[in-house]
Length: 121
Image 1 (cartoon, helix red, strand yellow):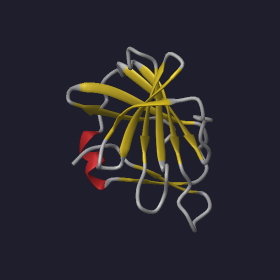
Image 2 (image 1 turned 60 degrees about the vertical axis):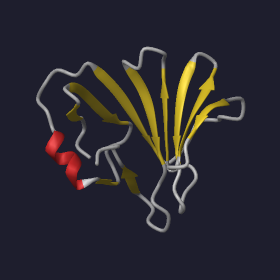
Image 3 (image 1 turned 90 degrees about the vertical axis):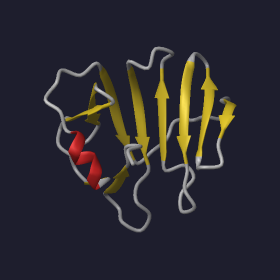
Image 4 (image 1 turned 120 degrees about the horizontal axis):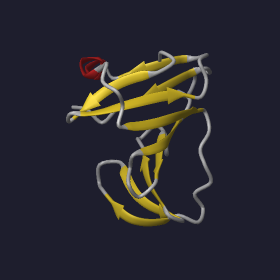
């Protein structure tokens, strides 16, 4: 992942800023189609290899498709899981969703490699 990865989803410019520049980042190939030079309205800090403590978070919504919405203090939390990793990605956002923290799991069996998937189909 470059130092800053700017994309636009649904016409909303978003900036993804990793907390480290070392490592290998795997992005969904279709995400490249959404690269954008626009000034971001939303800034997301990406943290690689660790997750925040969510023991006090309460589940507010759960799907059969691998994700949950949790409430932790004044924050909204989206926890994404897969058959291989639970969780593999967590997003923590204030109520307005104009900023946030994304926590990405290391790829199992490949130290220094991180899977970052934007929810784009």
